[in-house]
Image 1 (cartoon, helix red, strand yellow):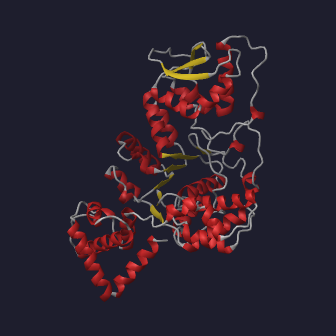
Image 2: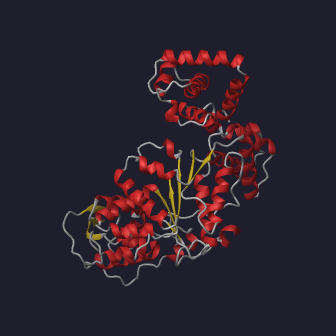
Image 3: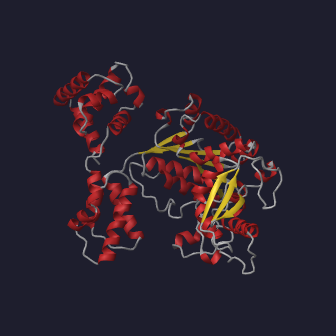
Length: 499
C-alpha cells in the first residue's frame, strides 16, 4: 500500500499479554492503525474480525469478497507477522468471507460492520500519497538531498494506497523534442494561479514519462499552493473506491471526497474502458469539478479520440482542454536521459557506452534506465572494466528483446499521427485520397518492418484481403520512385519507428 514499516516504529507486543487471542487481536489492530494510518484502517482493516485460532491458524472474517481480496493483496503479510508475535504461536492467517449479518455498531473486537456510518467515511481520507518519510509518526530515513527538501511539501496531496515518488520532479525530467509540449503544459498547470486549460490530458506509450510528469505536477502544485487539496489516484483505484462506496451504501462520501478537491489527477485512464457505472460516476465528477473551476489532469496510453470502450460524451469532454502527446524518444533524448541518470548516480560511464545504450534500447525510458542500472551494478560488483562487448554480454536478453520490436499497431499510430488522422479513420472503409494513401503507407511499412504475413497484415486493417495489401505495397513502391515528398515521408516514418 505504499507504506514502508521500519522496525524502530513498531512497538513490541507487551510481555504481560495473556494467552487470549481476542486481547492480542486488539493489540494487532492498534499496531495496524498506527502503521497504516486511520484512513486505511477505517476503510479496509476495521471490518476484520477474529473468528478463532485453531491448529496454529488464525481465522479472520470479513463481510465481502472485495474486502477479503484487498486485504490479502495489501495487508496479509504484515498481519501474519503481527499475529505470530502473540501467545498462541500463530503460524498462518486465513481471511474468510462471513455471510452473517453484522451489528451496526462496533463489536467486542472493535470491528465495524459493512454498513459503516456515513460519518466514519466522511472522516476518512484516501490515505496519504506522501513518501514514507513524510508519513505521520514515521521515523525519517536517509534520503537524497532533493527528497529531504520536499518533506512536508506533499501534505496536501492525497492518494489511495500510493505515494509520490521523490525522484519524479520537473528538475529531474529530461526535455527533448518528443516531450517538450507535454512538459510545457504540465509546467503551466502546476504554476498557474488560475486554470489555463481544463482538463489537461497527457497521453503516450508505456515508459515515456507520463507518471513522471504527473508526480512533478503534484509536487510543484502542492508546494506553491499548500492550502489547496490535491488528489492523485489511478483510474483503477478510483473504480475500486466507487465500488466500495456502493457496497457500503455511502456514495455521498465518495462524491464529496472527489468533488471537493482543488486538483484531481487521474492516472491510467484507459483502465475504466467498458466500465459503464464507473464512467457514469466519472462523468458527473468531471462536470462538478469543471463547474466549480477546479483543475482536472488525466493521463492515458492513447489520445481521447483513440480511446475505445468509452461513452461518446466523455470522449468529447476530454478534448475540451488541452491534449498533449508524449512521443517515443529519439536518440538525442535517450542519450540526454542516460547522461542525466549517470550524473545523478555519481558514476562515470564512458560516452561510447552511453551512445551504445541510447542506440540499442529504444523501447521506453524505463528499460533504458534499467539497462544503465545493470551496467553500473556489474561494474561495481564485478570490478571489471566496462566495454561495449561487456555491455553486450550483460544486456544480451534486453538487446534481443529490442531488436526490430515493431508491431503493426505502432505503425498505424505513427502513420495516423504523421498525416493528422485518427487510427479509426485510417482503418475505415472511406476511399478519399487523404485517407486511402496513409492507409497504403501503413500497409507498406507493415510489410517492410514486421515479419507478419500478407493475410495477417490485412486482418489488422479491418479485415481487408491480402490482395489489397499487395496492391498497397506495389503502389507505394512505385510512388516512392516518382514522388520525392512521399519518399521523404516514408523515410522519416521508418527512422522514427526504428528509433
